[in-house]
Length: 82
Length: 433
Ligand SMILES: [Zn+2]
Image 1: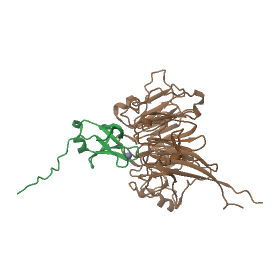
Image 2 (image 1 turned 60 degrees about the vertical axis):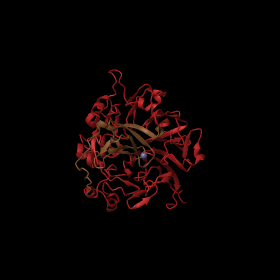
Image 3 (image 1 turned 90 degrees about the vertical axis):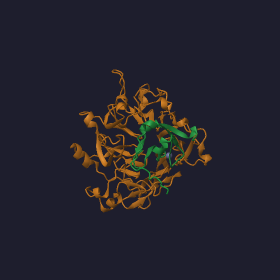
Image 4 (image 1 turned 135 degrees about the vertical axis):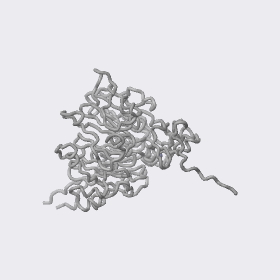
């Protein structure tokens, strides 16, 4: 778990942008890159979005129940053993 | 008798900091912590100084998330950095054909498609404002660009101090072009002062943008804004709609009889700060308490001196006020928020002018030296190991030393990017005799 000192800011999920293709939420970082977190990580209870270009991180403020439903259009093939 | 050799001014732009998308205007994408000369592509010639005509001067440099624009007093606009959504106002090659007055050289020089990020250096905008303003308004002006601003991925060009054209992209109404318009690869008119203050001789006094919203201040003291508004950065009325797709008057929430004309505005990440001509006239749009800003700020300048008095600047999470006595004071989260920095100043002294970036600031001292203070992970405040460069009294890093024949004339700061503009006087020997 990241230490408090590493957290640049706390950002409400409503202020972030959801990328449907990449399935990530992102938000601008003051370095020019952006903080990113995968929606599955949020569903797993993770709340720290990281910037790939610097050491800053943000804590995402959200309710798991408010996340969009997981799409099950492409169910994982079930492994069959014979 | 030989005439004395003519003196030639040469203006040079130096940059340092974050450069992953060519936003510093070099021919490469490496970060640097040493001020390095920018590269300008003027037609087919590559120069390491700013190509300026006689009597032409650099008027302003503004920054988006990953792009940078430079405006001259003749209305010419140069840009560097990311153009993936047309935020540099540069048009696709097929559209260049419809533009007049371009030589073949200029055409090939500016011809790159939006989405192409593989270009370094600064390039000249060939977009013709006059043509567009005539078509859009019927007004027959010799329209030229008079001011600039930017959000994260959008840019604003002000024509004739009256009309605002936007280009680039934004999910939260940053373009101001109407509901759900999130991208425009060429500049389109989003705001016109003559529409909202018809028949008056008012002009655009200031335009400012930050991450996701933009504001325009009229010389009548009225404020207009668009873009992200959920945090109250555009006032209480627009807070309700969360996003403002078209420009609207910003209501400062002052009661009748207590209204005052806005004199200056600055825009931060989630806020807007305005001041009037008297020190008690100040209004913070947004959540000041979240940034640890206590209002009113202790502004002590007298009314009469305001023109050369207080100057307000916003970072993403801070406000910096430069007073006419040369004292710069920072308010808000940035100066003491996160801690990965070598130097962090709350107050700087003997400052002539300054620029504030996302989480750092640059200041030109009375001696013409450039000081840097703030978040420095990308080297935008100079070399952290160069301890001799740290002015301990100022708690800031001296990143540029003024020289008599090569003086500092301006600074600009963006998202971990720093720009230093210098001017040298050289005796031109080639034209001698
Ligand atoms: Zn970053």
